[in-house]
Length: 212
Image (cartoon, rainbow, N blue to C red; front, side, top):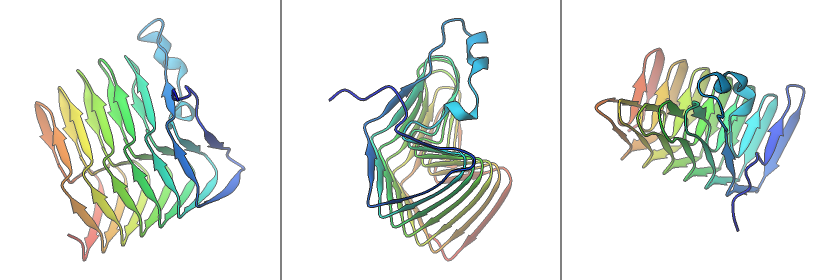
């Protein structure tokens, strides 16, 4: 079946939701741009996140977020799987094969998850997600963080940031505060003319304990 061009799930600012043993997959959220660059100004943080947009309090347990895509030709895109602006807790779950894809000149970030709120990940796998821009910049193939991120007992594997001009943080791009405990970050990639941090790129506060 063709992927629907709309988001599956949105949690509002006053909302509170728990997902147990749930799969969200095959969503394509495309941001149109009829009059670039001015048309992109109409998009806000609430327009990101193909699979899930969370602005409230969301708990995800034993679930899978996979095969979702947020795209645009000119406008910057983020959160192929999830865009978090609130409080998000992920436990025993898999975020895999999601993509933030800028088809021409712009920014693609947070292929798996884009976080600007508070995100806690425990015992989960972030795997094979991609942040992409054809002629622009890409960051955070697995996770892009500009808020507070706490990861423990998890695996960040085989994610990629791929762009022409610049790419950072194939696994994790940290522009906020990130704490990583007892976690494997392995075989991630950043690829571009100028690329930094195949596994992790941090421009702010990063703490790593007992990880590999």
